[in-house]
Amino acid sequence: MELRHLRYFVAIAEEGSITLAAGRRLHTAQPSLSRQLRELETEVGAQLLVRSVQGVELTPAGRAFLDHARLALSQVEAAGEAARRAVHPEQRTLALGFLSGCEPEWLPAVMHVLRDELPKIEVTMVTKHSPQLAEGLATGKLDAAFMRPEEGHPDLVYKVLVTEPMMVILPCDHPLASHDAIQPSDFIGETFIGVDNQAPLPRSVMEDYFRRCGIDVQPAYRAEYLSMLMSLVASTGGLALASELARNFLTRSVVSRPLAGIAPTIDLALGYHKANTSPLLELFLSRTDDLIAQASTRSIPPAGG
Image (cartoon, rainbow, N blue to C red; front, side):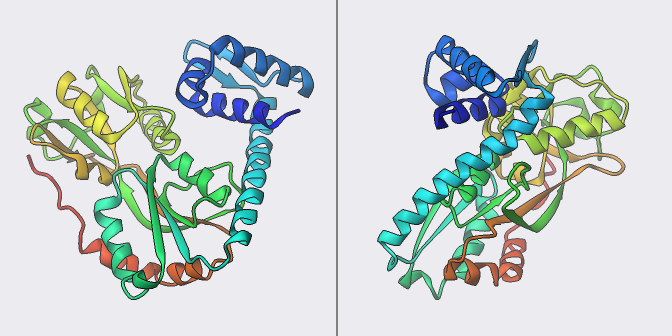
């Protein structure tokens, strides 16, 4: 079994599609990727994926194999990163990751709490989807990340920064925009904009919410980024659910409204690897309360439209 087999399998599982994994993640031909998957299943001795109308789904054997595949890849990446850091132990670098949309509140807060250290250290920053941030932490490429608590990474630790209620995103001229709050039943018959596989936790929260409400809502479109979600809402006249982070992307033609009743919530957390012994990370984590206080002063007020 080769590492490339594990990388291919993880990419297919996370994308939920051989086609998307081949084109978006691996930049290889789909027939070749399908062949590599069959080779892996033959070596494992079990079927790991089954095709469905939505793409591919994990079998029970596939779900068990996925966690171990991720761990194996993480350990290989971490070994390489540890070796590179051993070559340059004098470098004082703090590598931070940000979930797209959270930068307006949290990046200024980071700069504030690190203001005394900034002249003496290098801070690198990236913006990615939450699963990619988890992978960066697991492989040692990131020290800490502002992200969703992702499953499948047992060595990661999450400190919850804020619990956000989900809210409704809709066009400013939609009839429901005149309502103070949106009822679950208001989604019936409306075009719904969902999120794709790059946001597994928000997607799960939305699906669970509609299931508990007894409403069958199927996305007409799935957005990869919040900016794309806003564009789809504005251009289709549809509704979407998003966390409060989405307020950073509201435009003149799109507004937000709260959900009536008890809205589903989603956590934004500061994630890090429990084996990371960086003194800079320890210093950064010690200032979590200050981070939260600083970010709260920069929160964007609700959009009334």
